[in-house]
Image (cartoon, rainbow, N blue to C red):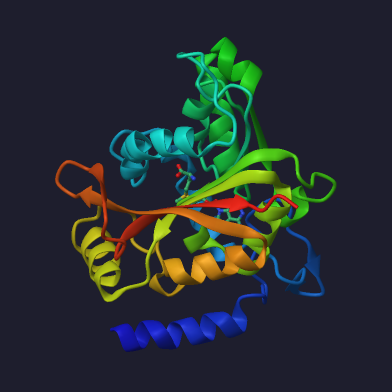
Length: 285
Ligand SMILES: C[S@@+](CC[C@H](N)C(=O)[O-])C[C@H]1O[C@@H](n2cnc3c(N)ncnc32)[C@H](O)[C@@H]1O
């Protein structure tokens, strides 16, 4: 099975930039004579899949249930990783401008904005952004109306004219879905102010992650929709660290994350063979 997955990786690498008649599914995509613009971060199939799931972002028992419960770990992680801290107990993220790239329906964007950060949620999925906007507007909370903005675009288009404007860029459960990791990380790094933080959560590419996330979670237990993950696109922490380093971002924290599949609750672990969180700091010139 691993062999078949590796063969699939090789053919995906050769065809990732060719759209060959597939309908463009997201925002900010430019088509030049049948090819995406050089090094687009968008995998059209992936974004199409998220478009199809867009009415389930806020359903308690959907494929996204484990993302909702992941907030218990990622909110404290983000709080401790931001360059600016506020004394105010109710708005501890106040003063920070955060980009939540690949925000989906806004599961993480909303609590960050509620805690006082100025948040921009960015996603290439048009339907995902519509779901996020609809949910924010249905709540009609003053703090969300003030602090939370959504944009449908690719990161490589969004960065144009906005270099060094964010204190933190959060890419949670996204890098394993993008087409060009180098362009994705490079664009995130460009958006960060010097000293700013890039906060990533993702899945390691190991035999264990293949059996647990593809075989067990997708095919046997249906915890997430079949086809949500492509094991070939999972990223080993050393590789992520190398790519970030190339773009001037230094690793400051690496933690394993463990999911209890019966209760869908998360806890920190030293083991990074499955899910992990990594924080990088952009160098100060
Ligand atoms: C698993 S979801 C994570 C959502 C959100 N970060 C969370 O944790 O709740 C992955 C999201 O990444 C988005 N995505 C995939 N490729 C992208 C790209 N190249 N640029 C921006 N968003 C992308 C998808 O549309 C989807 O909404």
